[in-house]
Image (cartoon, rainbow, N blue to C red; front, side, top):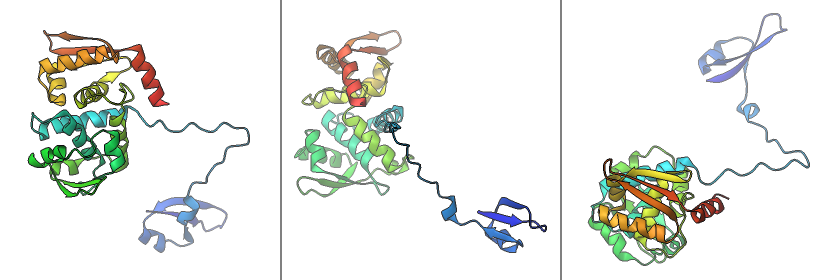
Length: 258
């Protein structure tokens, strides 16, 4: 469709209307408005006007995208897949391009404390989920083999923001150095946390973490001991788990968001 400018017979009135290419060519006294005239103009703030704050890096969209990807990985990977491997697979799935190709730089792997962990890649290859195409220190390149990854609707930039959120969830950010099992549990909890509290079914929580319910309870206790959570409760009648963030976690969340 084109934006056409048409003059009436009197020559005093001009009208703007959408028209296809053929119609615009057939209409008399008509000119097509060039695209250059339609481009928005850049507006510069007046002197003394405070600059608009940048767009937040983290939000509910990233949280939901990570939750969906964790649900997918719980079905795509074997139940015995280790927590460190699940964290690696999460980054691969979120950072893959439209051809399911992934390149993880060494700096990212070092930050996740997964650099040089060949056994994690071998675990994903054994599961038939990916195939490494290059492994030159410090980066690793791979091809994802599951066609379901290609069906992701959000664009690459949206998934890249979700991948960054998963590295340091704004809702429940942990200090570096924690074991992968605790970090994965924190990421899963963060995707189900809104405000200062969250809840989900124990079966869902255990499945996304790749643990038994008993192991999941122990990991929740460790998060309480680390003062990331104030408390958690398990309601056996409904199989629901509920938790509350500690004041320390709220301060960390504010720092991450800023």
